[in-house]
Structure formats: structure tokens, C-alpha cells
Picture: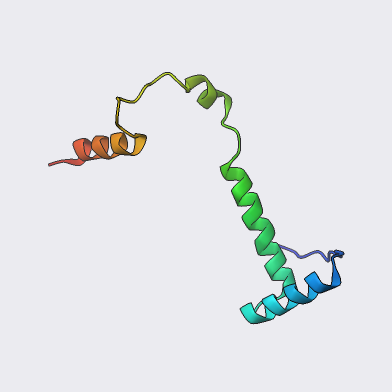
Length: 83
């Protein structure tokens, strides 16, 4: 992916700390900033609102008392793959 130059402004002390951190990590400030943005975007995607089909299906099925969704999945997989 082609790189584009970006100019940012921040507190002088924060910039020095960021430069020191980048140096300690053996990376550049630009690379560290890019990784930070990618991590923030990935986290945002995780918390994205469900689509219309998912919203429609929500509440159609109830789990048995005392069983988590994880336990139900484990049981289904064991049942399906048991020999």
C-alpha cells in the first residue's frame, strides 16, 4: 500500500515519550501510529451493530436454564463428531 505523508500536532512531551517508546520497540513513530490506528479500527469492527437479519433473528431461540451458548455449541460439536 503506498504511503502518504501526514503531519500531526501534539504536546511536545507526549511526542518525546512516543519517540522514546518507538525507539525502545525498534520501530518508527509512523509505524507505531499506523498499528495503533489499525488496532482501533479492528476494535470498532468488533463492536459494530449487527445486521438486519441478525437483529430479526435475535430472541427467536432461548437457551435452556443454566446453559451458556458456549456449552450448547460444545455439546452440538461433540454430538456431531462423536464416533
